[in-house]
Length: 133
Ligand code: FES
Ligand code: FES
Image 1 (spheres, rainbow, N blue to C red):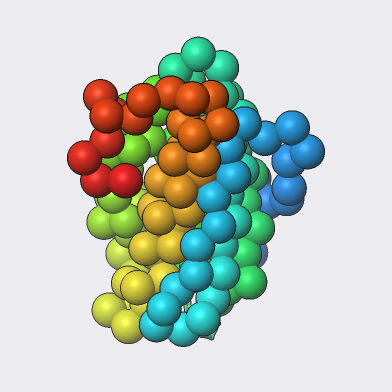
Image 2 (image 1 turned 90 degrees about the horizontal axis):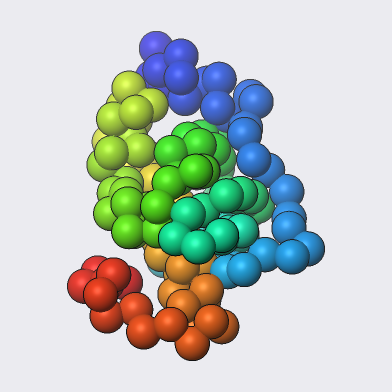
């Protein structure tokens, strides 16, 4: 089997799909390699991400990794969400075929872009958080 059970599950039943009317931060990124697009919406209370939604025009691996990534950052602190790597998401899904690893980068980048949008809208200095935004 090319794809793990977890990948197939998150592809067939993606968690946290949709848009969010009152999002505190929105990040949209494109994958230079394939042209796929990912949008991530965050609801933030204090330093905690209380809700996450995503939409993608992307492949199955992009859907599965985004679904898993939203579950990993829902309820997490901003600083921990910023540290989430695509590698950690792939590991949580029990791996991806090598040709699909680039798909997992979309979710990580979209989360970072949404947090950057949040910092900007709130007028928060991201310096203490960042480094890799
Ligand atoms: Fe993304 Fe085919 S290149 S779905
Ligand atoms: Fe484009 Fe997967 S082929 S994100």
